[in-house]
Image 1 (cartoon, rainbow over the protein chains, first blue to last red):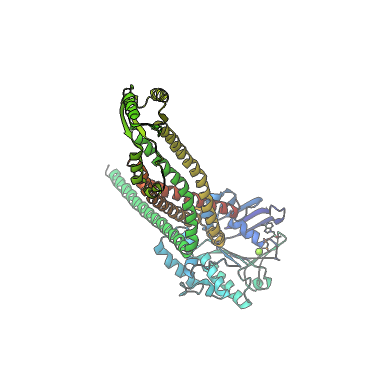
Image 2 (image 1 turned 120 degrees about the horizontal axis):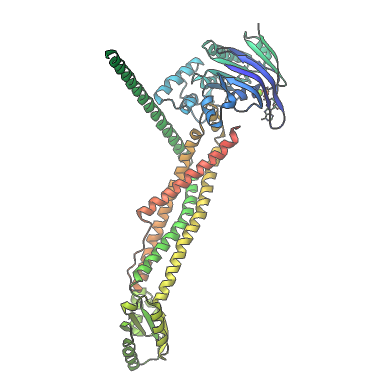
Length: 222
Length: 334
Ligand SMILES: Nc1ncnc2c1ncn2[C@@H]1O[C@H](COP(=O)(O)OP(=O)(O)O)[C@@H](O)[C@H]1O
Ligand SMILES: [Mg+2]
């Protein structure tokens, strides 16, 4: 589902953020991406999202070569991917329902199907019944789960997360990781970036470790 | 043969169902397309109405910018109307010296009326001129204060229809009349008319020039206003792009914003022009009565209103489009 083949990424500043990186993630597989701050985790996810372009090497997502996707096709490509951020990027000028419904409206889903899908997504992350509330009224952990609901509402094949437990306490962090686990079990391909080695080591999953842009470790924990 | 027919009917029925399916898909897509427009429209509208003062002040600036060229245009078409009305009444005004005596006047009138090409000659004594002026201008009180009648006696000559538009002939006639020592001054209304026509033409050109410059100004105003609201919604744009929104999806609500600015600006400017025309129509009608004309000031009219609002809307859409496109090119990597 995700295939990196000798991928390099150099920023215009000259910094080499990803160096000769190769790995494959099968459909339905889950992996953690770890490494110190500045190792290149976010850059790797941005390459998959086409927020950045690789400078060399091949990147195949769901069989599609990303270098063949031009600017006008990017929006349609992105609808296959769900993404969760540390700063969850929620919109506080609208209620919870409208936040989660955004990917559906954007892809032109019929309004009558939207309600059902949104409620199903909120249900999966344990936020059902709060559609009318403003996200600002939620706790940090709930906001992060809302971000996940938005990322999965359109049933993407791939779910990406960048430091989803960034400023949550250990117990909440484990809870969030559990949510990702559930999506993997439901058939999604999941890739979670986190610098919290202690947390990711405690979960039985594949672990990819980056260091200064190199992939230095690829193992199965516990 | 039978088999063949059966196969045919089968394939046609599957084609039919495929057709049905496509229709349904098309209806679904149209439905969601219109719904997304509805969402964009209502979000733009509610955002603008939540900051009514800002919306109105920007619309007002746009209205003023649109009113200037539109006002010039209205002035130009009214000048043209004056020149059209007066076209058939090219008169020559002959101002006599104030010292002329009644017999001299009679003699001169006789003489001039015998000139070739003079169709009609009318005498207006200085007293009659004063009376007419007093009635029509409303400056009666001021005139009371004068010791002497300042108006000279006048002959109004109407040239023969044949020579109406023959400038050469009229010039020759004037040249001949100027030799009369009783005549102080001769004025040809046609000259005045020609000047007016030239002025109205300049006015029209000026309105188009001014229009082009100010249209650019309106474009800048609207694109700046949209940029301002884009800045406060930068996060929203980023999220929409992230979840697979197309550029046109991002643009849509802002296009409606530009639409509202342009439409309201256009309507306001039409109202300004209508008020100005109404306000000026009374004195202008009085003035035209003074020249024995009945001129009614013309406003922009229905077609003018439609054009003004369309121009406003067009500029609004273009300005918004430019602002969002500039913002989007800053977000996307490629
Ligand atoms: N837009 C950018 N321009 C230049 N350098 C960047 C940019 N983004 C990230 N970097 C650099 O690339 C390296 C990897 O960054 P990042 O992928 O964010 O690491 P991580 O997410 O693992 O902390 C860092 O050294 C960072 O400074
Ligand atoms: Mg990072």
